Length: 374
Image (cartoon, rainbow, N blue to C red; front, side):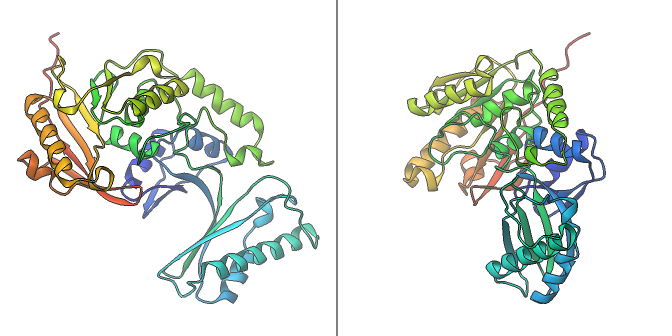
């Protein structure tokens, strides 16, 4: 299972299909697919918009604790967990008879221990080995048991040492770029770049750099996934990096400290030479580029405070849109009056969540650039 934030499931499915895993099944908050040990390595390394990669161990209906215990115990836990595995259990329950998460976690833990006792003929397990976190998720009385292969969430790429206020998650920033159908030969501007996440994710995409290349994963310490598979996937990822710079990547902000952080993050991501960061107010935004994409997550009420300031900021962005009338604009915001301020409906809208805040991704398509003459 590749888990995903609400609204990004179809994007994750597209990514999986591009990696060669075509038997995808999209569900709320996750995409199911079939793969081997190599798939665990590859998907963790390459998925830009997924939250985590998990192994689905089993799924069944459970309305009593006895049912939950017996059906969990019947699953083949010893196929996955070595004798010394450290296997904490996390849980969640939505619209289910078994609503006490702490009780469900305790019962699943006990059931897994009993299952392992039968297989290993041991009475006690030290849990001093590899971390293999189990999750029990109950939805409408259906329990799904899974193992987390990722460890830290996949948004943690390893390049963001620090971030400004209300940072945009890397996975969501990558999703904004992918949904805008941006390509490295298209100019891209983010006028509210903050700590640089959107331009950095665009640069990683433009250079075909695997987002997981500079981090580790929980499953790297699992004994049944050969170390050589992780080495092979990392070597492949390095070989696939494109040295050619994206055509035009620019991040603007009015906060000098945020720009300092953005430059450091770009350096850590290995894309500093591909992005130009500069201090500039949105009202002063101009460009000589005839066609391009403006992709941004501007401040809104929760972050900026003063409603008057927010309205003024969006009016300035609307003026920029009128002056750059051949550009496409992609704006993620919780500000509810954007279309009114812009004086036109978005070509397309998509509901997404940024840190638990419901937002809309407003997409205003500009004219297509003319095809070059042969």
